[in-house]
Image (cartoon, rainbow, N blue to C red; front, side, top):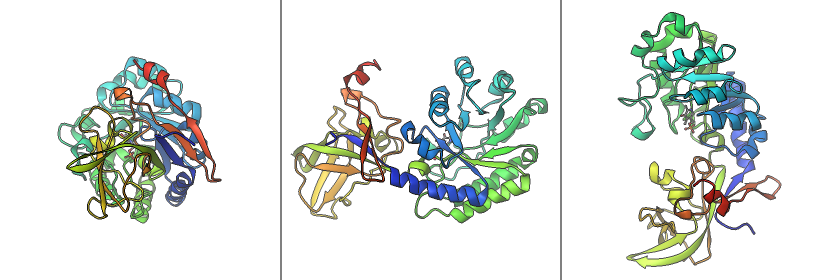
Length: 370
Ligand SMILES: *Cc1c(COP(=O)(O)O)cnc(C)c1O
């Protein structure tokens, strides 16, 4: 028996997602990268790299992980690189994407034999959540049309591609609307470029995603401008490919029933509080829909460490195991040991039925970060 809490990654579901991504690649000619900031379980990289073309990284640590374990195209973009970042990246990076004229003029010279790109801000929002909208007013993310015009053409000579990233959990209609604006503003540059990266945020492996429109739009750009299109999804790669298994430690009453778990929103699923959202839970329903209702909460001292309210067909008991769904993404890469909370183990549910413990954590992991 594996002790809770643990993340349980589904090999089968990763493969299902890869099948869909492979279809997009085959039918559109695009290349697809894993955004490691969302999911970095390198023990599964041999599987992912059998379909995906490489990774994108947010800095030297992720780039090094990719270099060690993924071994294909290594793309790096950071809003602002330091000298130290650059010295670590020169040897292992294939594509480097700068966010400003300053960064381009300071660091491009170190990447003469690599592909150099610029992140563009199309200044076009297709979503309401400001925390996830790089196109919002006063955004630091990407070079605006006006700022791009100020970059001397001689400096642009070293640039072989553009990158934009403005979506989050969106369908291809929002991508398409963004591409219309992007083309209108930047087409004159595209004729001279080799590659164009549409960023991440494409919810490609979600059941209602319009794959045909995505494929059409990729083909339109690559045919018209003779350019290699890249996508760099994080979520779509590992969507719905993991559970967080937890045990009910106690049940207390204060007007409502409250089940205290051995997992924490603040430590093990921070997006629940940041985004915020209520994660799906196996064998449960919305509050009020079934007879037995509970607030599910963490054991930490943060009063707001609440995962959400759920209802069940049966009474919860101390010792019951619960299974939070869609927990492979933005969890293991973001978790922390606030309150001295133990980190959940990481377990792979293999297709052949075996469970392989990839990582266990203990006191030393807590101490080593202090
Ligand atoms: C976050 C991010 C991604 C991945 O986004 P998902 O929503 O996980 O698909 C890709 N590229 C950049 C630049 C990002 O910031």
